[in-house]
Image 1 (spheres, rainbow, N blue to C red):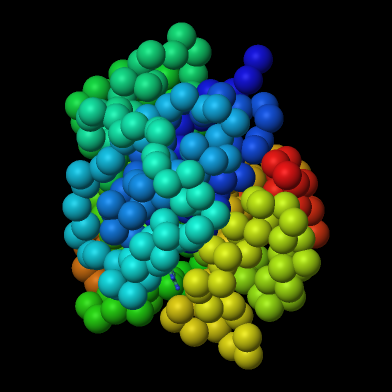
Image 2 (tube, rainbow, N blue to C red):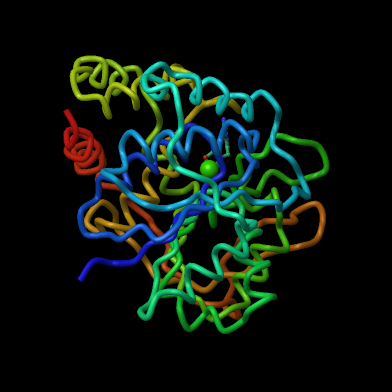
Length: 313
Ligand code: AGV
Ligand code: CA
């Protein structure tokens, strides 16, 4: 039996690479994809998603859904622009047309439909803000019976955030900051949560070495595309800056399918929704249980990308 997976992403480079790799994982049945214009603009993110499904989806018949959720704190425009470049890669535009259609409902409604349409449960993999899941829970609370577990890239429990903006205290991760209340709503639900936060994603920075490796594997179109994608964003060189890129979402996606890629621990945690720490996730004795990813098996992680990346010649 294949595991049902619904993927929600927000159009960043590592979101799109995550979709690419997810479609190469053999034991899953991808039932739907929601696309948010959060760390991207919606139009190119959706277009790139459709082209990825066409070209690398092995005939996958799904219609990605566009989100109409809006930011409390929007992402910087410079980061959001990457989706335009990704969508324009020649590798995704060889055929000159797009076959995969778009769902006729907003992503949070599509999520409800796709969950309810399965007799069994579905695993959620979410690599952007949690707004669509929070909205879906409000409209139809019974979906919790249809959700196996949630893998979320977001938050951090070590108080070292990655938001460099005024009016916040430096403890918050961006996906949580975009819509803090949504994170709180999901935390207050009964969904089993695996959190891939900054304490673990910091262990897999984009480096020049890994770029060189992908360059040497260009004959594999997937690894070629991954190399192209990560050429758009700055690697970790001498020290971490606000723009340094990590493999945040790819770690989340691979961990959802291969638990041996990381170690975890069970912790009790909660979410702040008041300024200047709104969106902060933190450990607390009266919090709710989550599984937190702690230590990444670095070699296993990059070896998995290689394996999945060689599935299409
Ligand atoms: O906070 C990490 C999340 C991930 O889902 N995103 C990027 C990943 O898709 C926001 C983000 C934080 N720092 C960034 C981000 C940066 N330097 N460039 C682009 N996006
Ligand atoms: Ca993302």
